[in-house]
Length: 255
Image (tube, rainbow, N blue to C red; front, top):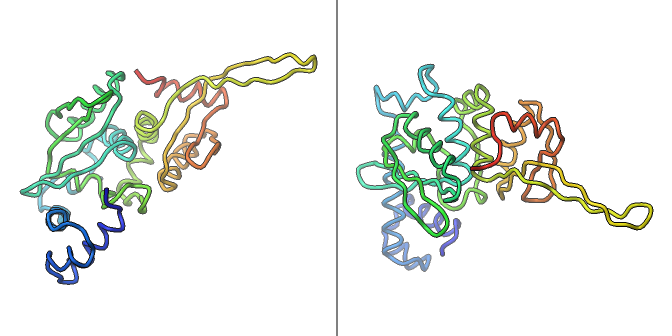
């Protein structure tokens, strides 16, 4: 599997005017792979250009379904990706555990509410890819780029920040429903008599390797007045009883 650095180098050489054969010889990337990556780059340039009169090229307009979009944005940042296709069409795929039928249904509903057609489900081992083909996905998710999300900056556009600020609950729900969980944390201690005692309490965990996405999660918690802690390089937690109870009112356990 090629790294994000390989993709960036190939696209940079292509933009500098090198032909595909030269790029393949210089980088060691196969010619077919160079053709696929550079074709995607050309689609990027075409599809990112706003279309006059296209409602979805102006997502911050008041009639947009902000709640559905905020939820879908959280899901995309956690477990989603875009793939360029011919004729400036993009394929959105969001992966969800096959056990969570309600979350799969909610994600499908959000896709429809933002304006796309009914998505399809592709079964894989233990999970489903929720897939939708639409030319406007690149407009709604400008965070798309080469390589995994944790290898590149993930920043919200100003119009996205407006939506997330207006719908912080939906955005946080999308993040947790993709890369988070609600579970019991068990603590074992030795008391004064030497006996081992244990107790358990519910908490929310958010696991992601992108520090930028961590920041989006923690900033949204701050907006909602939810206290969070960093328990490892990858994991953030919400553990205080009142905060967990508050998140339970609009997130809850996955199902």
